[in-house]
Image (cartoon, rainbow, N blue to C red; front, side, top):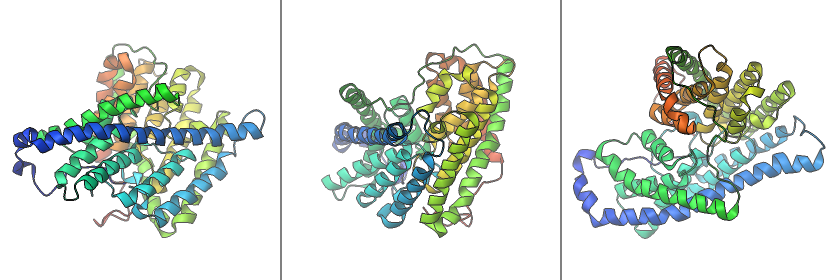
Amino acid sequence: MSEPQAAGPASPAAIDHVAVLRSRAYLSALVLAALLGVPISIAAYGFLALTSELQEAIFEDLPGSIFTGTTPAWWPVPWLVLCGVLVASVIRYLPGTGGHSPALGFALGGGPPVDRDLPGIVLAALATLSLGAVLGPEGPLIAIGGGLAALTVRLVRKDAPPMALTIMASAGAFAAVSTLLGSPLLGAFLIMEAAGIGGITLSLVALPGLLSSGIGALVFIGLNSWTGLGTFSLALTSVPPATNPTVTTMLWALVLGAAAAPIGWGIRWLALGLRPVVHRSRIPVTAGLGLLVGLVAMTYQLISDRSFTQVLFSGEAALPELVAHAADYSVATLLLLAVCKGLAYSLSLSAFRGGPVFPAILIGGALGIAASGLPGLDLASAIAVGIGAMCTTMLRLPLTSTLLAVVLLGADGVAVTPPVIAAVVVAFVVSNVLPGPRDPETASGAPAPA
């Protein structure tokens, strides 16, 4: 997957930004961004709805019609093997290698995907997300939204300049993830920070994107009201009350931020270390990794007596339930969940196709709840600190990680902001101080393979 980026042959200094903003072409771009926001957000909503329906059919309806009582712990194993075969086949045989490898994070480069790459990106992501691999939908949606917008621009004007393609691809990506993270601003901020856009160039790219994102959010709300399929937005249904931070809370935030860094390092180290093995024999190795993910989820259910679905999938649906019933989980169960989710996450990063954000949120939330029993650390602060620190270590996007943790807590987010910032800063610094982990295949500076 290739995310949109602010790149082109002209340097920012060579662009007369005021003239661009006043130009008829830029005003036309704003209008086109608004128009594109509607069909792209509809396509994104349809993709998320289809993924959700497939998950429910395979992991709830089908076993419910076969077995009485609890779904057996082994149920996800064959589906994860099938997931590996399908994803690997798409990567190997279709153009575009199914998109960008999530093991490399939000690595931007190369512009939006071209039209021939889009079917492979959609199919690889659909198999990954619906059959249980532990990745999120944000990465593929950004690629799909950017690719569809760029395709539209190319159809309208084949000789469109690079800056026009960048602006419209960004607008399409904004629309595709407009409500996924709970707010259109969060999705937009994720894309802009990942792309490293700054200065006046940020305004040129962001204005059409924000417009498209706002329209996309309205479309998502309307489609949910019309279809009743779901909001497909990260949100906590029950938020624990937050208290004003104390010195003790801040100290624990520093400790948890430092502890998150080696956890994220281990997840990324395993994922990057497996990539060369995956590339040598894509289909059998990816099927084998799917088998391991299924076995990890099975082990969690057998030990904890809780559903394997908490380990599988992105974690978007599991997090609200986990937070709402935090008191029902022992520390041992929470740590087991974090370990199993982290292992399945790492295995999925190495070979499957999806986004890296949502599993990191779930792991951070579980670790935060486990730490909330520490003296002087309230539950709301612990959850927010865990999410912010874990997302920082995995994404290396400290601003987005801070906003994500704060916005998730809703009205109480203001109270937890200081400890979240402290944890994010420490996690970011420690993550960058730790050596590696590096992709063995790109250590020499060669382009990263898919």
